[in-house]
Structures are given as C-alpha cells and as structure tokens.
Length: 523
Image 1: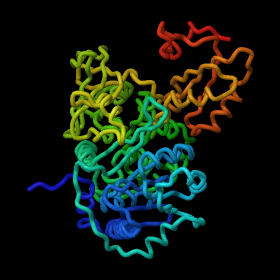
Image 2: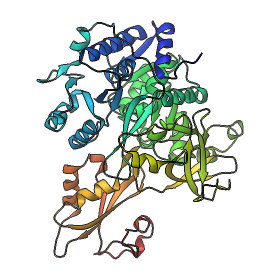
Image 3: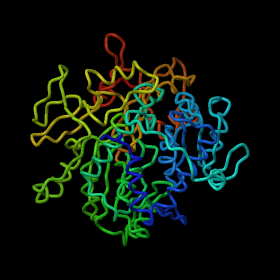
Image 4: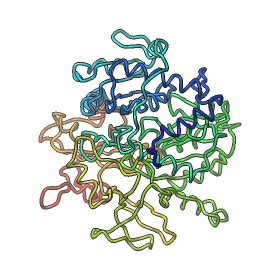
C-alpha cells in the first residue's frame, strides 16, 4: 500500500483536523482552515473552467499575501504547476520567465500590473491575466472570479515524481534557469523541517521570507501541515516586522541574514515590548556570527542556520544545536551556528569532496565542493538538458560551493566556486551585470565581483576599463544600470582601472579583483 508523497496529502490532513482553527491572517482579513481551503477550491474550479489542465503552468508575481498563499494549493491540486516569480525583477525578466516556462495563466499583484502590461506583446502564450488585487482593464479580478466559482473541482491524480513547482534561479549565466521541483522533493523537505525544528499547531508564523523564494523554503506547506497560523505582511520592513510580532504574538519566522541585520539595528523604542523566544531560521547567505550573537543576546531570540539551494528543494543541512553547545560562551556558540551544519534527516546525503570525488578530511581546513544526492534533489532544469547534465553528475548534484568539514562533522562554506553574488539572500549573475555595462558607450571591458558588505552580506562591485578617450562617472554608470537591471543587481561601487587582470588565455582573474587588489593598475 503506497500513496504518493506530496504536500497535498498534508493539506488533506489539515482539512480534517484543523478546519475551525485560524489559518491565515492578512491585515484585516482572517480565515479559518475551512474558509482558506474553500477559497483554494474555488480558485481550482475557476482555473479548470479557464482550460488549465494537469502539467500546465500558472505563474504568480506577488508579495506575501493570502491570495499568493492560496496559489500554492489551488494550482497543484488540479495537477498544474506553480511558477512563483521574483517580483523584484524587471519587466524584461518577467517576459523571459513567462515565455521560457510556457505559462498559460499569470496572476499578478496590483503593484506589478503595469510592468506585466508593458510586456504583454512578448508573451503570446499567456492566455489569461488575473489581477490578485485592484480593478484594471484587461485583467480578470481574482476576488470576483472566486465569488463566481463553485468550490467543486476535479482533483488531479498526484504523481510524486512530477513537478509541483517550477522555480527560477539565477545561475552563472545571464538568463535564469527553471528548477523542476517535484511533489516528492517538497514533501521530503517538509518532513525534514518538522523533524528538526519543533514546529507545532501553536506556532504563529510570520511571512518575512518571500513566498516566491523556493516556495518560501517549503514553509507555504509546512505551517499548514501542523495547523499553524500563516501571518502575511507585504514587505520585510523592520518596523512592520516588530509591530506584527507584537500584535500577533509571532513565534516563528524565516529571514535572510540581511533581514537579521536590519532587525538588529532597529531603534530600541521600536523593538520594545517584542516577545523573547521567537525562533528564526536563516539561510540564503552565510550569516555573520556577530549578527547571530547580537540577535540572540539583545532580543532573546533563537537563531537556526540552515543551508541549501533551489535545486535541492531547498534545504539540506541545519546547524543543529547539541546539548554541549549550551554551556559555550555565546560568541563561540554563534560561530558554530554560523556554519552550514549537518544533513537533514531523510532529505539528502551531503558530502564535501575534492577534485577526485573523495571526501575531504574533517579538519576544518581542507576545502572541497559540496555535493548532494537523495530525495531533495530537483528533477532537473526545465528545457535545459546541458545545464542539468553539468549540475548532476554520477548521481550527485554539484552545488558549486566550496566548504570545509569540521571534526564534529559540521560543514562550513568558505567560498563559492561560482561567481554568483548573493546579496541579501538574492542571487545576482555577474555575467548579466557585465553584459549591461558593456552596452554603455564609454565602457570597453567590465568585470563584476561580490565584495563583503555589513548589511547585505556582499554586494556587486564593478571594475571598468574605459574606451580610449571616453569619459563617464560612477553615478552615470549607476543610473545606466538602474535603467536595465532590477535595482538589487546594480553595483554598489564602480572602479576605473587601466586593464583587467587576466590569465595567459585571456580569462579574467576575478580572485585578484576580490582580494589582491593591490596588483591592479588604476586609471
């Protein structure tokens, strides 16, 4: 007797056990699980009337709202695939992802309707445009659609190895790749969360982490699995976070290290009255030990560091606390918590290996690449067999992250083999930024690397070689980039140099730009 593994099975259980419990809080709107699932069912019914069939893609562009949360149930329970898109991207990025994914329907928050309208002629495959909020000509109103729909729909048969979500992530090339995440992938990740993190029906989860980010690290389904409360806020504003924590008695949240830094730096009058004991899961970039120590010491919150990638659904390790850690000096304990940690149970096997595929010594010094295999690893990159074959070799997913293993078995990332810049939990392709800079009439060559930043973890820094006789300024380049890139991808600094450091074969030596900058000849 086998049944397919899927978050939808956890939803089935929640319907039966938690129908009268409060499920979602979004501003003035509050729904019980019965009301929440009825809304999901009405949307499923409406999508089927629009012609959405199993395997079809339905894209979303929205912040953390109840409607966006409903999408993670309404879409997969009819066998369709949700494509949650990063709302911080540009209209051109929206067009690329909508075309590449083959989205049949796109559902958009009011703040992004104009951006999508501007690229409608570029996405002829999109048949239906649904506005999550706000009336707009040419768009179907979401609430009106639900009100006119019946909660009766035809549920699809779940195949655990088929996609539940198509998550786009920036790689080392300019165009993002579509990560095919299956029902089984997400179900195993959820069970890993539940085994390691003590989440229960008593928890009140604050949506600080964007739902689009690897399906909210699977917390869109995890909280429901135990009958907890989802508390939605539209943006990760530190003041709003504290106000909501206090007013809704929040017990749990996820946040990138950059958000932790902003939380740690709010004025005392804002944080006053915030409850102690709030549990916070952080990932997206290695958090600074000092940040962990400060948040735990000053606020009395409990930080848990987890690690993963979109390609592994997305969490595979946790800096798991051990009894012997409790007696350590807070500063020492924070250093351990800043490590990526040990494997999640049942999710995946994680190793750090050398160039020959042999595991590195557990000495805290010998570096290798993190590789992963098991239940959490993606099905592959959508419509990109070459990238899939490059990432998954001999049954192992190669992360591109360089790490060491400590004597206690805890993994710690030391660097990245890739040139991806992780700023505030967001991936930035240096190649994409360089490509934009090269379109500027004064730029002859450009190289972009990530440099450390106190707030964002790291930020892009551009090194520019100008064309002979050409002139420009850092501010002019910054404005040029802002016209062509999502704002978080714009370099924080621009440095003009006479030539880029290169190998004999002409490859740019980015490690020189990152560390050995004394060797650079400046203009």
